[in-house]
Every structure is written in structure tokens, then in C-alpha cells.
Image 1 (cartoon, protein in one colour):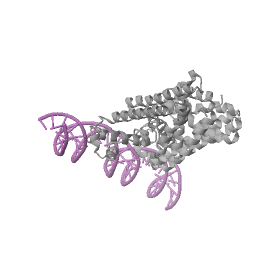
Image 2 (image 1 turned 135 degrees about the vertical axis):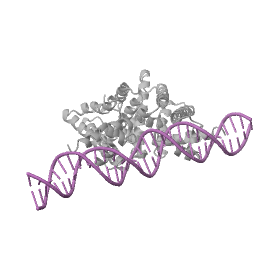
Image 3 (image 1 turned 180 degrees about the vertical axis):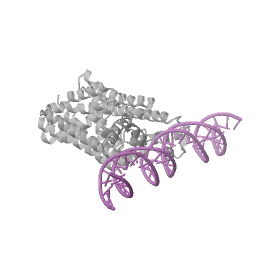
Length: 187
Length: 187
DNA sequence: CCTATCCTACCTAACACTTGGTAGGTTCGA
DNA sequence: TCGAACCTACCAAGTGTTAGGTAGGATAGG
């Protein structure tokens, strides 16, 4: 298959970057994981910056697809809103990993320009989706749905970060519970 | 002065780590900033891990002192609660930097054990302070003050992260405003 | 049908550079 | 004269990246 190695590189890079960030990526380890040599990665990606951008782009696309699939499964926006935190929970379940773009947000100063763009695009996808759902659910006034979407996105990213720093997924669950109790998320 | 270089190293390391993380620290650049040679840092800190732990410890102590000073200035807990987000805002104002321990929470997998401990201790300090203030303010039931404190801490860290990824401090302000509007923070 | 050519996907081997860390000095004030 | 504070000079490991090569399949010309 023409793309099997390329896909394997993308997948391995995503896994690593969700644990060690963009700066934690290196061609030798990546190549080892895929079963090829470091130099061969250049056949698929012209530079580390390009690889990083490709990984972030794919991550965003996958997330967008997952969110849309959630909508397809249930047209009840409140149900979708309840399920949303699970998308971030999955990363923690996966060996205490975190959202790729949260990590990259921290690394922002060191990021090549195209990667920065992708990080922002990821946030946009999430906020747009949340905003739509909030509107549909009617839990906030129309003009408040986007600010609220942003607040929810930021708060959940923060919860994931804190839970990661304690390797404690039950802390994540508790934080989401507190967000609901406080009224940030619908109870 | 016996400690002037040591203090200068700590200060420079903190500045760098708030922009590039623990992995972004390196002895040569650090030494340049302080005006000494890289090897001389080893006179003050036996290893990078020790330096990292010392920086995080000092960061926590400084934060604890600042929070206590806030309490001294005003005994009104609601007022303190309103001021709390400013401590995170300052980092953003300082060249789009972020909380040292949020960055290190992302880098968690790569952190030496003593540094991990300090990262957790920093969160503990913040949560304990917030919890005390929330109790004093009586904005939540007593048994909810600690969970709520955690939720506030996590949410604010997330807001800082998102604002950083856009180099947009007004986004941070807007997020804090949304937290208040949603009821996570007292209005 | 055979052969020359080309392309894809990979390889080995090296490059220049950065990293944390060490060995062994020198300087200088108490 | 002793030790704190700093130095020069180095090392081994790891980094992104490049040069140049090879195996094997597709393709086209005779």
C-alpha cells in the first residue's frame, strides 16, 4: 500500500505527541516504532515542521469526525453535551495522555507557524461544535452560546491537564462533575 | 553576594520555563542570561533535575506568598476571589507566558520525580487557598468548597492555556467573565 | 517478449549542531 | 591557606537533516 507507512508514521507521531508534545517527537524513535529508518520519514514528510502540521491536521479532522458521529448517533443536544467530556477522557484513559493541541498550546512559542495554525483550528472546531449544540439545547441565550462554548472547552482542557498531573482519571470525572454542579455544564 | 548568581539563575530559569517548559531549559542559554558559564551553574545546582525542582519549589513559594499577601490586603473573601484570576493573568501579560506548573503538567511524562512532586504541591497550594476563601465567602456548601476550588483552579489554567494559544489576553478576560456568568466563579 | 528506463520506498552513512554533564584548573576574599 | 565561585576544555549522546545508494515493480520502445 502506498500510504501504509505514512499512516503508521502519523499514528505513531500522534501517540508520542500526546504524551511528550511536539518537542518530544524525534525521527529515530518514530521510525523505530513504525519499523523503518529515520531518513525514510523524509520520503513522506519534508521536515519535522511538516510532520507536526500533518499530525495536528489529522488530529483535528479525526476529532471533527468523531464529534459529527456523536451528533449522528443522537440528535438530542443535551445528550451530546453530556458525552462531550468523554472525548477528552479517552486521552487520559490512553496511558494518561492528553489533548495534542493542549500540549501544543503550552509549546506555542517553539511551534512552527503552520503547526500554530492547526492548534488554533482544533480549538475552533471544538468551539463551533459546542456552540451549535448549546444553541440547539437552548441552555444559554443565543448570543452567549459561543462565549460559553469557549469557556467549556477551556475548562475541560484544564481539567484534563490537572488530572494528568496526578495520573488520576477519577479527578477528571470529579472536575467535570463540579462543572455541572456549578452550572458551567448543564446538569 | 553568596546567593546573587543562584537567585539570578532561578529567576532566569523560571522565566524560560514559563515560556518553553522544563525541556526548554538549557544550561548554556541560562548561563548567558545570568552572565556566567554553563558549567558554573553546577556549582549551585547539581543537575538539571535539581534545578527544575528548585525552580518549581520557588515558584510555589512565591505564589503562596502572593496569595497570602492578597488575603492581608483585603479580608473580604469575595474580593480575593475576584482578584485570584489576576495571578494567572500576569503570566500572560509577561510576553504571553503561562503558569510554570501547567506547562510542567503537560510535560509530566518527561519530568524527574522531584519536579513532579513540586507540580502537584503547586496545585495543592492553590486549591487549599481557594477552598479556604470559598468557605469564608460562603458561596458554596462547606463540603463543596474543595471540589469547587479544584474546578476553579483547573478552569483558570485552561483559560490561560487557550488564551496563550492565541496570544490574546482579552480572550482570557472573556473566559473568566464567562466562568462568572455561568456560576463557576461568583459574579 | 525482452530490455532499458524510471519511480517509489526504503536504506547506510554521515553532517553540523545541541544537549547535560565532568575534570581540572584559576581567582580572590576571609 | 582555604574554600567559594567561577573558569576552560572536553565528552558522549542525541538532534534534524542531507547525500547518495539500492531493490523491485511499473512502463515504454524496439
